[in-house]
Image (cartoon, rainbow, N blue to C red):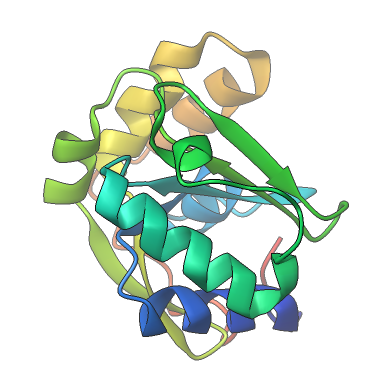
Length: 165
């Protein structure tokens, strides 16, 4: 069993303490929904609402990213990507994802656990829609793997309790 990266767990706890609305997307969400694979980063889709962006910035500052010159607009402006850290523990925070609005993604969210931290993952149907919309080769592979189960497979047990990519 591979443990969930401790830095990610601490980040999730900081996000929760600041009541940040976010979803785990990308490869960790793909693994959560039944298709584990390697990844070099953690992808987070954050609600682009300005109040949420301020809470996100406060959580990141508390976590240890103070002094980087980040401002709330970095997380609320359309189609923004902020990358923090280095693989394999890099965190990419986006304000939008292909094919799925924040409202749609939040409505379909799925609660889970990551190394003991409570988190929300993008729902399986919304993840599949996102993966199909990007057009990237790896996303097509992910979508085909997820679609092979016809959206009927239950999510994996909480991350940290099973092998993670």
